[in-house]
Every structure is written in structure tokens, then in C-alpha cells.
Amino acid sequence: MKPATFLAAALLAATSDALPEKISKSMFWARDAGHRLAGRATPTQIPKQPPMLNTQTSVGCFNSQGDLKTNGTIKFNSQGSCVKDRCMVLGYEVGATNAGNQCWCGHKYPPKQSLVADKECNVGCTGIDTEACGGIEAWSVYNTGLALAVDYSAPDSSSSTSATSKPTASATQPATTIIVTPSAEPEKKKESKNVGGIVAGVVVGVLVVASALGAGLMFLRRKRNKEIEEEHRRNAAVSAFIGKPPSSSGGMSMTDSRMDPVMAHRRMSDGSIADNQDYSRRILRVTNA
Image (cartoon, rainbow, N blue to C red; front, top):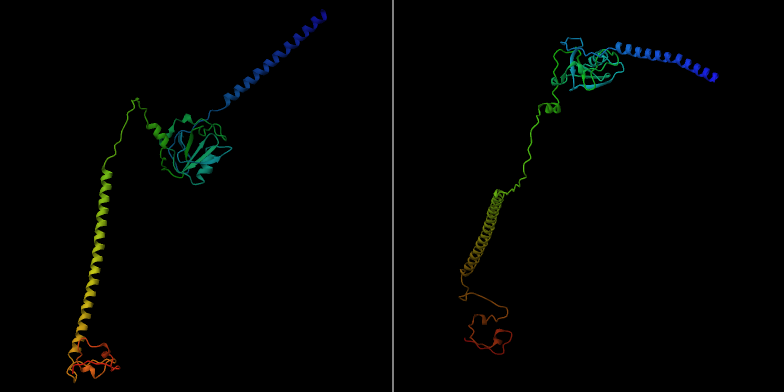
């Protein structure tokens, strides 16, 4: 029993010696962390300043970037490394820092309506932790010193709509059935258009028929005139022929190769034998001398 008692006493003594050492180390670590937290400064947004040429001045903290364009990420970001070394060198009148390491540049300030309290820009710069480089959704905006008069960009449509919109009360109304009756005006217009087309067609048809009739009448008139001229020409020829002086026999002289020249001047009786018509056959003749 004595050895066991001695062993237990030894273990208890060793544990009691190690416990204060662990407690003291824990207290040291807690004290060191407290000192570090107390020594870490809170990022501060530079208050708004009047613009000055060739000097970077603060315009304030904004919750919108407006027309500013991102110029990349800077590992050790600060007002000088972004606004002066980048935006001013590139010819921009406005520079801004955001989310600690983001740099933005532009020619106009963000919308004036988006100006917020300086406490909204509470993220320290990655280069200088005591200096605020905007926030998660906030921008520390500066004038680069290239121009004193810089315009504000137009407000965002979404923000302006949300700012001006007001809640309206809505009431549920019973459903109503609306019967739309088409007016007769289109039909009237259609009828008038049809009537106009018909009238135009009739007028064109009448003109075509009149033209055809006129052409036909002119053709008939020319044909009639031609026939009359031809008839006059024939009559003139006949008149000229009849008006010639009579031959020695006292009348017209007509000869036929089949007739006897002697018989040509004799008057034949009606009902003569047909053989007398051929002078080559002198078989039977009946003549009135």
C-alpha cells in the first residue's frame, strides 16, 4: 500500500506543477491578442474637401460607382497608388477605391444621390490599413486635381425608380366579362373601297369600248370612202369609153374570133339554129337580110 500511495502523491505533485504553467501561457496569449487588437487602427474615410488643382481631394463616400470604370486590382492599394499613380496619369478627373484593393477611374463623379455617410467606407486599404478604401458596396471617391469643375453622372434607373416608387394598396375586384363588338366602320370602308374600284373599272371599260368603236367607225369610213372612190373611178372609165366617136358602121365595133366577120354586122333572129354561131360550119343559116 505504501508504494501505491507514494506513486499517487508523485503524480499529483507533477500535475500541480504543470497546471500553473499552462494557465500562465494562456493568459499571455490572451494579453498579446488584446494588445494587437488595441493597436490596430480603424480605417478612416477622408472627409469631403474642396477640389484643388494638382492635388487629390476627397469627394466623399458613395454607394454607387456611376460611370466609373474599374482599373484593376492593386496589391498594396491606397489613395496615392490608385488616384494619383493610375487615374491622374491616365488623364481621368475622378478616381476611387473600393473593397480595399480595387481601383476605379472616370471622368464624372458617381450620382449625387448616391452620396452616403463616411462610415459606410470602412474597409482599410491593402497598402495603408488606416486609410479607408471604400467598402464592400461603397466607393471612396477623389478628385485627381486635373479639373475643378467635374459633373456628377446621371442616377441609375433602378435606384431612382426604387427611390421614387411608393407602395400602393390593391383591392381584389370581382372578375368582369367584357364583350368587344367590332364596329361596322371597317366594313363601310371596305365597301367604299370596293365601290371605288368598281367605278374605276367601269370607267376604264367604257373608255376601252369607246376607243374600239371609234377605231371601228374610222375603219368603216375609210373603207366606204375607198369603195366610193373606186366606183367613181370605174364610172369615169365607162363614161370615157362610151363617149368615144362611133365606128364606120354607126355603132360599137365588137369582134369575136369565133364569129364570121360578115355576120357580125347582121341582126340575128331570135331562135336561130345554134350552128349559125360557128362560121366555120356553113351548113344551114337563117338570116334576115
